[in-house]
Length: 346
Image (cartoon, rainbow, N blue to C red; front, side, top):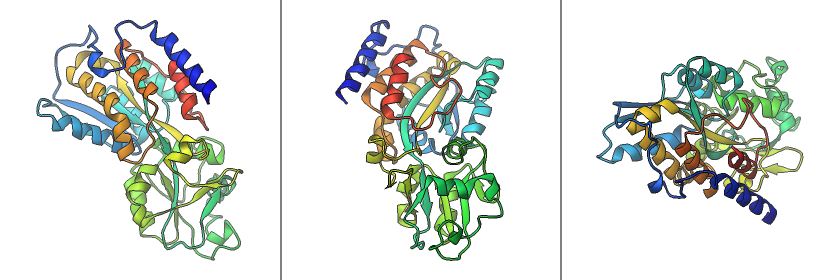
């Protein structure tokens, strides 16, 4: 751990020494010279339902200030749906539960949409059942694959097909819709291939819809972001996930200790560079977002990132650092420390 901290400190020092007029505090970060002193009437945000609670909370803080007269709209169309709008230039900010893909990068480039990538939290993708389910307490990654892989469609339909000791009851599945970044991450982490998934399940890009379905169905099994489990834990039961090292329940502690794998993942916002250059309100909103994200993340059930990440986000924001550190690919089993190293090298 000491070696990691020293390495991160050296990376941070090397990076920030090349950046002039930057600081650890948002108050000392100045507006880029290209930023126009003009505010549009609306800041448009869309994308991941997993990131939605964070962005919505920050939007409320922003609009609670009487000096901020600009309306902030936050939609839910899933990470993929959000990037479709973002790369078409329709939105200013895109909520994302996975990194931007190469195909999306190409669309953004074609349409002249530059973007800044800001990691804002870590999530523990949660496997949930109805509280009336008294037989299942944990589930293996191999069992998740057997349940969700394309070949399971119409075949794995009973609980006793997961384990013989389980009751002979219908297995009703609830999961992310195909425009959700959660769908992309979950399929790769469990089935082993992005977007390889059975189709006979209740799908939605809105996690509240999944929560509602599972809470009313004693035979349900589904998945969504940890924030939605924490918010509704009185009507849900989380299953511990066993990746071969024993069952582990999702929590802030198990994410930080790199125990909840492979379903821990970073969350992001992507910001249109032109929006912050041409719209003073968008600029101020993103600055507020970077400053307040760690506090808000904790209140809505996600894992806050280290202070170093907030500082690096400020540096990248001030410098207008466009692009991504992920090369258009989702990375499984990423730890908070590894994310920090990527950002420090960006």
